[in-house]
Structure formats: structure tokens, C-alpha cells
Amino acid sequence: DTGVSQNPRHKITKRGQNVTFRCDPISEHNRLYWYRQTLGQGPEFLTYFQNEAQLEKSRLLSDRFSAERPKGSFSTLEIQRTEQGDSAMYLCASSVSGTGGSGYTFGSGTRLTVV
Amino acid sequence: DQQVKQNSPSLSVQEGRISILNCDYTNSMFDYFLWYKKYPAEGPTFLISISSIKDKNEDGRFTVFLNKSAKHLSLHIVPSQPGDSAVYFCAAKPQAAGNKLTFGGGTRVLVKP
Image: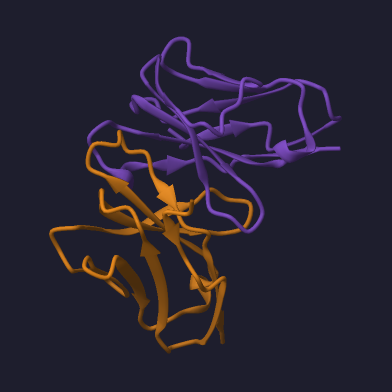
């Protein structure tokens, strides 16, 4: 297992377009998290899944954002009608439930630039 | 409302000396604290953690101290090495938060040879 994989690594899109990111977690990890990091800030929680169930969503996750984890394996994060304020690094992490934050493994992120 | 704050955005230290990174939190429900290290173009990696039942945890060159009454924790790196140059994030969680972490804004550490 090569860790948490995120694709694409970089995405440049025009304002108003839709984008979709993919995260492949470590195979035995049942929890999957999405975070967003803007320049000079720490990662901010967006949402997390336990298996295929989306258990929590941040109020940062507006109606334009949707995340899925259809079979409890990979996850996608879609942003509709992108805005310049959506420009950020989108980080995915996975863990086994009950391991505490030390069990998080982060991917390298997808950097989104909205022009 | 920033519940976890790292008030020093950057720190420069000479190789071999001690690096001290500070973190303050406001949420009394936080009872587990972690430090992550991040290199450019990589995701954060876990460094060290501490539970609120302890006031110190040590792992090799890294020691985390927790002062619950002051809602303050610090990370000490001794001795600092050039490979320690990175951004360090403090993070916290309550016991029943489903592992959701709240991060500070990070401190960029530069270790000069």
C-alpha cells in the first residue's frame, strides 16, 4: 500500500466551472476525511466518512460542495460553480476508527486554483 | 473563531540548538493534542501527541509539554537539525469528535546549519 493518493495534484479552472477531486485512502482504513488549507493557515475540517456514511459536515462545506464515498473505499469531492475563494489545497486523510489523530495519514493534496 | 492558535508564524534557529514552538487553545473540551510536520508539496505527517491526562510526552528529540490550566502546549526539538526545517501544526480534538482535528495556523521553522 502506497499511502493516501490524491488526484489530480494540481487543478486550474475558470470561475464557474465544476471540478472533482479523488482520494484513495489506505485500504484498511475505514475513516476518510477532507480538509482544506489556504495559504498561511492550518488545515480546516470539511467532512468525514466512516465507511460509506458521511458522518459530519463542516459549515464551511457550502451547498456547492459535495463529497461521496460510494463503496467505502475511494472518495470524491466535487465543487460546483467554482469561485476564486475556493482556491486552496484540498487534503484527504484516512484512519482506522479509534486510533486517535495519530493514526491519520494525509495525502499530498490537490491544489486548486480558480482563475 | 480560532480555537487553536500558533502565534509565531516563523522561527529561525541554529543547528544544534533548541526549537520551541508554542500553541494555545480555547476549547475546554479538547483533551488530545498533536503536532504535525509538513514539508512543501507533501501532506502533514504525524510527529507526536499528548493526552490531557499527561503533562509531558517525549519521543527522541521531540518533547511536547501540556499546561491544561493555561490551555497551552509547546513542542521542543532538541537538538534541531536542518531536516527539521518545515511547517509545524498544532492540532487538538475532544474525546468524542470522531477524530476530527482542529489545527492551528502553523509555525514555519528554519534550522540554519
